[in-house]
Amino acid sequence: MAILRPLFPSICLGAIFLVCALFAIVGTRANSGIALLWPGNAIVAALLIRMRRVNWPGATLAVFIAGVVANRLVGHDAWQVAIGLTAVNMVEVAAMVYVFRFAIVLPYPRLTILQAAGMTWIMGILIPGATAVLGGTLLHATRDVPWWTTVQNWWASDALGACLLAPPIILYSKQNLLRLLR
Image 1 (cartoon, helix red, strand yellow):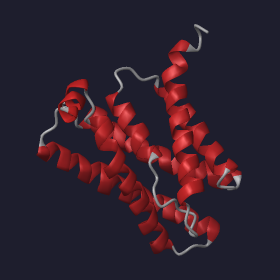
Image 2: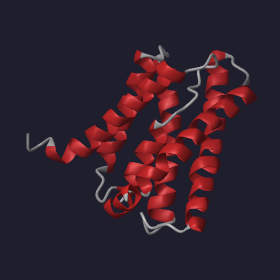
Image 3: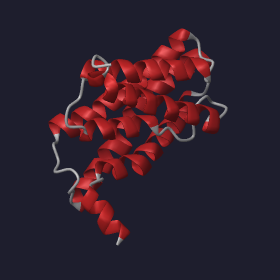
């Protein structure tokens, strides 16, 4: 049991990503193969941005396995496609985490409006847009779906997840919660 203790946060991240991916694929997958809402990337990225200590290899492996399992289990994707889709999601999460944990370190959870707007632009528009091109290209090549429509749908799905779900995690603090409840 003591061996698993350091891995517990990574296992939790993988479980969160798995549940989010399963929900998104089963509950919101459209005919192009894109979920209408993809919350997993934003939630995992926000948690990794806010976590004090991260076991990077463990977190990476847990989220990768969760993504492949979700794509195989309920997405019914071939191994190559499941691995490819998961890799694109991992690139998106890694980009968000790198930018907001290492390149632009903000005073979480006390962000100014300008900082939050910049974060929204990068995390909700720029990074999902770039990875949507990768994901759209992969799905166009493997499923023969229209490239531009697939890119747009991928971006909208990831942007919606990032804009709706990352801010509450990034801005969370006991003080902010108590202030909201008053």
